[in-house]
Length: 129
Image (cartoon, rainbow, N blue to C red; front, top):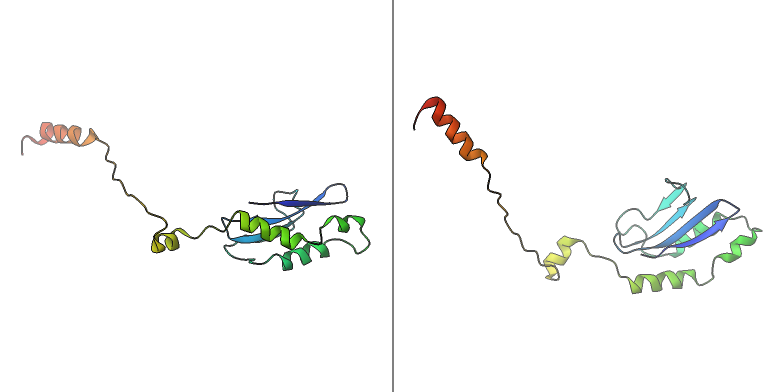
């Protein structure tokens, strides 16, 4: 997972990056809060390309804001490199179907004494069989 952060003013933080688990790029405006003002890329495959998110990030700044220059011109390339370094995870069902994920199911039984205790109580109350 990658996360690039950019500040705006003294307290505002914006974040953009790549989430391989969701196979999407993401953007958080006002990321310093538990619930950002805008959070895109929260669904699987929602944002397959970074350019629309970078445009939204740039729109968060005023044109004459000097901090706008802190957003690299090649940010899209850098985000794609992040994706290349940490590729998207495929859903488990797809990985099972293609044979790249194999599951072993093991049945675990715990010896429980309640069956024996219940049988003994039943016998004591109602007699044999």
